[in-house]
Image (tube, rainbow, N blue to C red):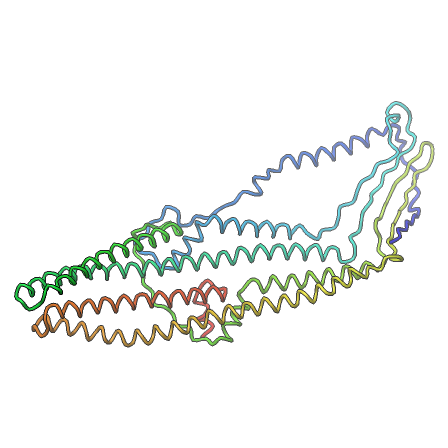
Length: 453
């Protein structure tokens, strides 16, 4: 590039007053500098960076906590989420300040100390402004927008991950509460079975082998109960740590929704809600801006505009304007143009790759959900009927002695084991739903219900 400077006279001015001392100019400059410095000193960076962390649920106690409230409490107290949100806010503020036109430069020349002691000799005051290059502002602003969306994606996906963790902890507490109750009932039944078997052994209707087995089953039930209670405490402690609720708080049992949307509809929802889609779109726009910027470098464009005012002793005043140009004569910027052209194509391929990856995640999560849903519905329909029939048989046997006492105990233990399997399968379908929500990029399952309608 060759820089060309053009100079032209602007005006001729006959001074109204003769300026003998130029100390006045120094006063003006010093006042401007002092005002700028004073404004900088009055700015408190801590005020701008101070974070207002909402604690809506601070010092609030609950008797019963729903899953939605537990999620809101976890989001409210997460310092790491506040960290990611703050980074996104900072990037947003930088976006607001990006792509601005440069301020002009004030230039004072031909000034020396002799002006104070001697008479005025010569003075030049000028304003120089550098125009932005063609496409420079658009590229700078788009780069800031990409940086902001990268931070937003980090914050949003961390938020979704935190919500998924809270839901898993919530489902785990439900499971171990149920298992602890069933394990305790099993210990009671195993205790009753020992007494029944020992009585039958005394009557000669059972051998000592049954008594030994009964005692082994009792010891196993106590061990299983102790392990289940320990896991229950761990699950409640984890939920309490994430949300801030008491470890003994009651949870509200909610029915698991059934998703009736097909896979294509779910993929469309994921494309609409996953923030990575918008991020890669902004990256494509940045590549296009860089491509345009490199091509516009071949257009002659001014590098500076200079407006100056001159004054000589015993002579008239005058002003002039200078403009500098870059002329693209030797450097045609071929390499950068080809590089940015390929960058646009690469970003378009990246967009397709992101969409393909999201589609794979949704398909995998939906496939796992469908498998667990089929298992859950089939097992639940059959088992609930069998449990109802078995409980009716147990009641009849206790009233009319139609079964031996140890057989009644065995039937009740079978019911407990079946309920245990049912509780574990409910947790499996709940976890599958949580993973599907995360793949779709949604926080509230209500969105899926609205889509179904």
